[in-house]
Image (cartoon, rainbow, N blue to C red; front, side, top):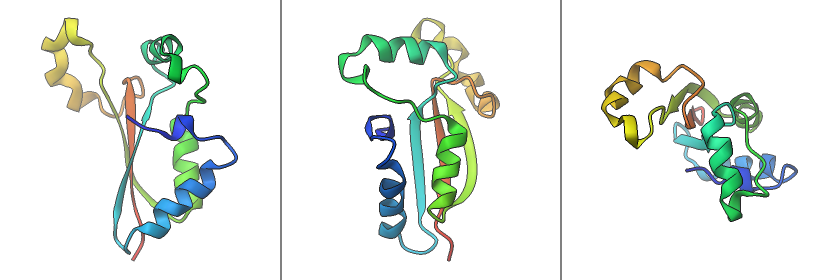
Length: 113
């Protein structure tokens, strides 16, 4: 689960730059976050006291932040489509990874070099 939704908006660019600066050239960073497109995710976050003040990071915002720090975006995947009560459907998830409705998303990036 990601933490960027707990980082104030004005500090996020610097936090991403810190990650960029910490990696060696060619290093990979996996940016995980809760998906604001998923209504169950939004509902769950409103019920958890420590997430009530969170500001979700939309996937396009995450990619923009990462690119502006110098990262090359490799891919964006969406995961966690099916809750436990329909776990039998989970083997289908890899084929849905481009559908922006999963409970979380991953932006996989690389530091050039």
